[in-house]
Length: 264
Length: 116
Image 1 (tube, each protein chain N blue to C red):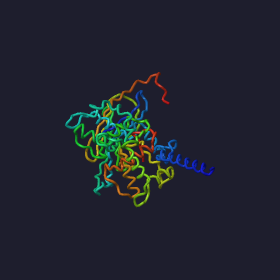
Image 2: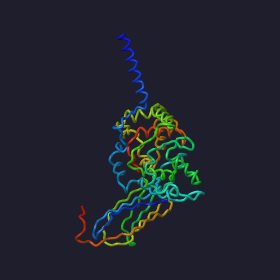
Image 3: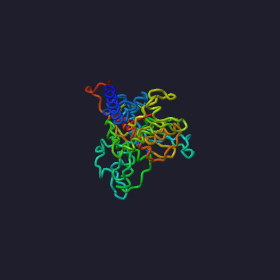
Image 4: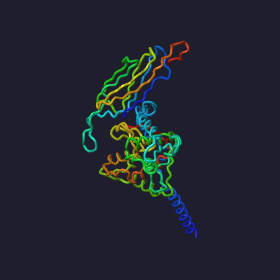
């Protein structure tokens, strides 16, 4: 009798913990209180360049992005400002991207959203990925959310994308046979050659990368990581990159937007 | 396409030594790199950058391929007169960039804020 009670209790406990585990299936590899922006790992020279309001080289692209905002384009002869109002009204927009586009049901990052709006509503020529204009505009929109914490939504239609992103982040790939998690969760702070490994946080993007001498999107940075592990790079605009981006935004939840940020 | 940003102190007094910072938007292609198709990217650097005040040369630099993209130039001037500051630079493609600024030098007086 006592044995049976114990067994029922044990089963109950197991079931309870099982439930708890499934409801917290999205375990955070790095706890929220230990999150650190890439700026923390960048060294004093890069940090001072980013905080210098004038010399920050991302400002050049930011300036041109601000100009594009009010410039009428395409057959509609409308600027972004014609519909959206002043640029400052975009405050709080970038922190929730990538997000599901209601019209198509696809996962859009901010670049996709801008490209889509430009073709569909402005009826203007498409901006190619990573073009100066697209990067500048994304930076301008993101910079209005400077200091706000990342808040990506991972439920509803975004759930499958989030799970795929998580899977990709945890899966070893390429000739180096490395997963994102091997460096950015397990060994951040340690050195890879001469530079410390960061946590791979996405809160600064799009940011000025000194190596590339220009402002670059998160997608370009992810492609470069694929090169680093010698994996096959998906074509521009591939959904996998958006899925990883969504996972990264959730992973860095609460980190402040830094645009225009500077990294090595 | 070349544009620039200028930073000088908000108020300048007669006799002050003040810092001028100029951030120029320029690719500074060294001519040593290749694009994704393996074709060499032609050298295109700023050859010559000149700053004049009322037509008189006050600063000149001739950068070469060792300077990174979007160069930041910093130099000091002693405030002697107000006038038109003109920055002008030319690159390998013979593009001429220009930036104008009206420099206002205030008379030095006793109410001048402490310099440090």
